[in-house]
Image (spheres, helix red, strand yellow):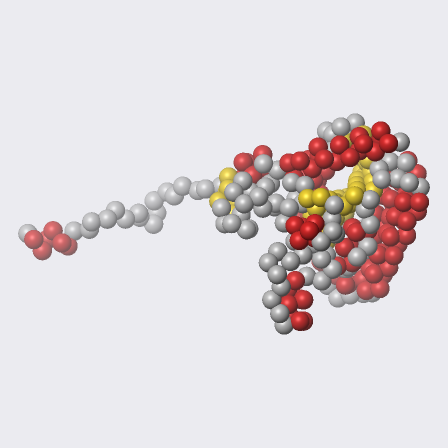
Length: 282
């Protein structure tokens, strides 16, 4: 009898054909920084910011527009502009098509006009899902056209930058966009109009070295990587460990590269206050 007792199973087993409970995909999200498990709906209510460590998850262009502009006020510009393959770079056309299917966008930036608390603005928002929001001919063209429309309408301009830099598949044509966007902003500045640049994670390469750094007021989201060359490449080049937080928004604020760091839940309010002050000054 004693041997029989030890032979008996002490734990319940689940049969292979027994029905399993399915947990819907996307119900929970793991924070990239602190590994906190967050209920997706709660994350969305909190502007996609981790409640534990304040990590700002990356937003799509449409999410950003909906958070910043007054409801139903957005009118998009140049929505059908799309890239070609001017250098016949192998696999580039397939990469563009895949990004278009994944994001529902034609290119890595969405431009248009709308209002913030009733104040009209021209807006450009980059989307890092589209080939890491790299700047090719179309991105540069759309941003330049947005600047020119803001100049024509005498509207303030706001650009939310997020980019891996220039798009290598377009070579020199991509690098030319740095000069083109900067020249358009020089004309905009000469007219005495307001340009607010908002740097989000990540803002790097040729975008940082051109229009992203030319704002009258430069705002950054907390923890955003802001750089020309990323810290990993610098460490590999100089064979030294960089300081903690190097090239993050807080480091850049401390060294005078940005004017202020604004959490996402305060971004719309901050922009509205700046626009109100600008209108009063006029």
